[in-house]
View: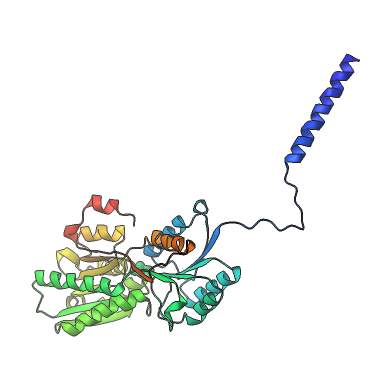
Length: 338
Ligand code: GYE
């Protein structure tokens, strides 16, 4: 009898345990909608992944808009085509994201899609490169670089370098490798060089082509320039980003042409990624103008302010510098994040 009681009590305990576990499980009512996620959704449209600089920008944005901080980031790569970027932005609008960040491949052609975003009530932050639109109210804010100022930095330092090399009044022949045509980065950097050509009677562009901001194109263009113009007739190669400069240097190495501090062709470049600064320190690149890809924290602050319904500045230019070999050392380069 006593033994039977123990069995019954044991069975009751097991049943009770099942009841407790069952009660703890959440009952799902199929007719009640799931509670919406409280994350703020942000769509980020990049033009492509043509350079290490752009990868650094992507990482910077991804690092800032994390779930831990209350954000869900949807990233899209336009594979170097404006049409793809426009499709990606339309998808963001359909998904009803809370904010859209766009790094526009070129400046023009955004009016329609930006109007659609505005109509849907989605604030748009333009970053890195800018847009030219009929109405500034089509986007909320811009964060990025002043590319004409970057170009002017390069020109001022080139004037100093040429004077130091006794070439202030000698003919200066320049190979110009442009970035993606129509992008703000190309327009500003090219404008600075073209203005300088106007004001320096002895400066000439002897070869010009579009390198699409890539190493492969930079190499091809420099190799063609060396063949057509001849190394002896080239004093400067003005590359509109580091990838193009790496390509131009590869072409000069291949052709056995002297460049940099050892005499010969001077290389001017933009971005100042760590690998390029190391080459600048070694004298291979003579002038490096910084273009800062760490824009994530700026965009994050902007969106945080907008969330709190604060007024944000329409334009934020990021602080940038220009480097020559004498300004660089290993510790300084190692301390930089890009
Ligand atoms: O210089 C280049 C990149 O828009 C500032 O695009 C950016 C430029 C940068 O691919 O490396």
